[in-house]
Length: 364
Image (cartoon, rainbow, N blue to C red; front, side, top):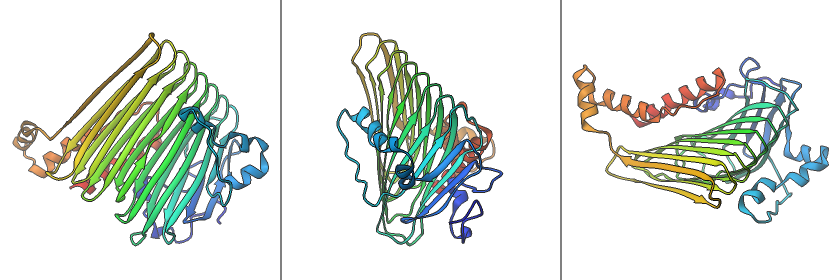
């Protein structure tokens, strides 16, 4: 394990493809796990704690009490966490710590058949934390990545978590996550798939307390032979809470299911679902499933969903401006994927912009 230096043989891995750079200039800390071995674990700031989940259980009694709580709050049922052979990270921002530079995380699948991780993020009261998590695999890797992540965003705190997946076609990925967002806290979740695994199934969840906010943005690319099932569920549990789910799915022969569910349980809650799909091939499919559920008469919930192909008029117009058909198509797709994500620090905006450029490159 290094102490903040570059990971050994870092040039083997396509870190830039998932927006990662472990240097001190661009991050507030780093975590890197290859297969089941942690190889990088360092914090560059006093207010940010980065240790293994095993070390966190030994160091803090309350971590055992926290395990499973976000999943229980969202699912309404008791969750048992197997403590045997836990690997993964524990990241905590101390109260009132506010930094723009992100903690950078990478899970790399190389040799093992199954990479199983359990992770915890705790954003203490009044603090602000940004995280970029890149997951990728060696070109010859064959196996599965199964990750469980729990987020605790305390009162008046804010977490921006950006996850970028780049797998080969022999990998199955099953990321699970759940968040507890306390009073007046904010959770922003960005999920981008560059090179899809053969099978991805994810169902991130968030339970919001009073006046809490959650925003989920996803950009999904399904290439030929891939199957992606992404579902987002938000429970508006506290009065005045609000949520927005935005999904952009592009199929070039892949099968994509884009699910979104907002449940308004408390009064004066608001939620909106925006799900759009773009078909670039005669093969594959996109299935959009927006779902709204009101359990209180004083809620405002809405959704819009649309799936289609690129309009010929748009292509013809751009071609009259001197562009080739491929160039025109590329511009339209780029605009389609350009989801406005408010409140991001500059370094995160740059990382996402570069990632979207790579997404576009994988399509054309």
